[in-house]
Each structure stands twice: as structure tokens, then as C-alpha cells.
Image 1: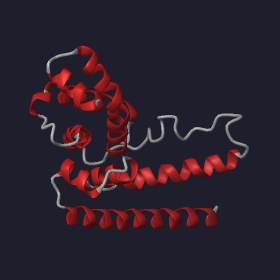
Image 2: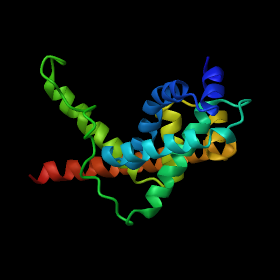
Image 3: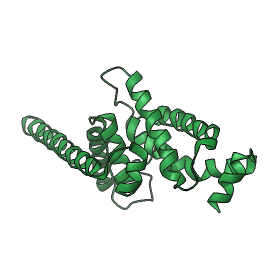
Image 4: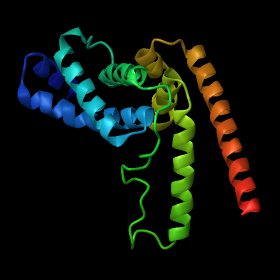
Length: 191
């Protein structure tokens, strides 16, 4: 089915193009959001990446999977965006996608939801501290669930390099989260 849509989209079929965009807009946005940490910026970059993918469909090799190809375009577009940023990106709008908000009636325990939101915010902050390529690898592996082979297609890294980057990223994130926990503990003891 996807192969037929891709062939039709290459020929300019608007329905096929719309179907492809509808299928991939969520994974592309998720990757962009995880890499950029800002919902509005992620929406813009995701849209830009999807437009690039559609306009470059003639370059896509149908003997490969489309998802890694489109995510590669999104990843590269995010990395370009990150390079244009100032050295210290603002993390003020973390969590504004609503995914971490508590709505009455959806959970019997608001305190647990607040703790969950704080943990997610800390993890997103830890991810934001990573280098752009490491953010890409982490987002593709943990949030998109891609295999090492697919991540290799997206990033042009070898499988051992991906494993190494994931290992280093996990260590860096754990270190960041540990420091954050020590800081919070110290603050609560002196308050």
C-alpha cells in the first residue's frame, strides 16, 4: 500500500501526497520535538522536513524503507536548526505540548501526575543537554522505536557507533539527572 502511495506521490497525485503526510506527520513531529524541545519550533521544522521529503521524492530509493528516509530528512533539518541557535537554548517552554498536563477525571492521583510531569521534564532537560546527533540517536531509538539498522540509515552511523553513542548518551543523561537530584535534595534540606 505504501509503495503504491509513494509511486503515485512521485507522479504528483495530491491524494497520495496527503496520505503520506498524514502517515508521517506524527513521527516527524515527535522526532523534531524531542530534538528541539520547543513545540512551535518543532511544528515549523516538521513541516519544513515533510515539504523537503515530498519535493525530493524523486531521490527516494523504493528498495529501502520510507520511514528512515523521511526521519533522516527531519533529523538533518533539526540539526541545521540547532546549529543556527544561540549556544544556550532556552528550555522555558518544555512540556507545552500538553502531554504532561493533568486533566481532572483522567487520573485519581494528581500528586502522582505532578511527579510524573517533573520526571518527564527532567528527562527532556537531560536530552536537551546532549549533542544534536546524540539527541537524534536517543529520540530514534527510545521514542520512535527504530532498530539499529534503521537508525544507521537515518544517521549514516555504523551500528557499533550507534550503540556507543547510546551508551554515552545514557551515561550523560544519568549524570545530569543525578546532579539534578542532588541539587533538589540540597535545596529541600536547606529550605
